[in-house]
Image 1 (tube, rainbow, N blue to C red):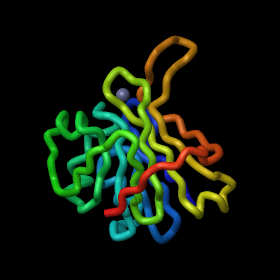
Image 2 (image 1 turned 135 degrees about the vertical axis):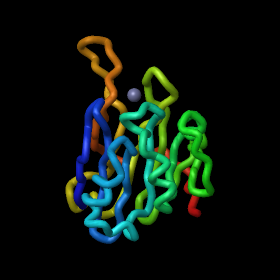
Image 3 (image 1 turned 135 degrees about the horizontal axis):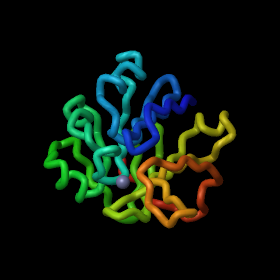
Image 4 (image 1 turned 90 degrees about the vertical axis):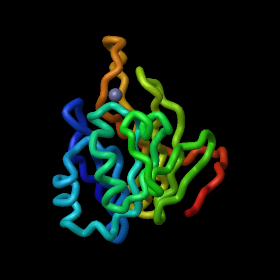
Length: 168
Ligand SMILES: [Zn+2]
């Protein structure tokens, strides 16, 4: 499993989790051309995209994701803010888990100054890298009490609570 970091700051956030066969895009805040390049222009392996909130450094290029045929998961507020409604626009439902390819994705409420979720991701190949689970959540600057707009990437154990899976 590779984690490609295309950006992790207020100038744009985007990550790609790539296990060689499948790729999941996290955040849509980087020009789509850069995303394509990072994927070696192999867009067929993309199983989906997840976006945490509507700020442009996370969601500016969300339309390019759906236009490229990627199922993209985001809060209703994000789709409304961006004016993007497509059959591939998936709305986060509270308490629901999702499966994109072999990636199991659990959105959870996160703290920010706009509606926001973090994503907990489980994938078999992560285990080979020593991770049970990887979590993306907009970062919060504790020292200054400020909300920042990059992402924090955390890892840990799979929580014991089970969750429903929606497979489309
Ligand atoms: Zn933000």
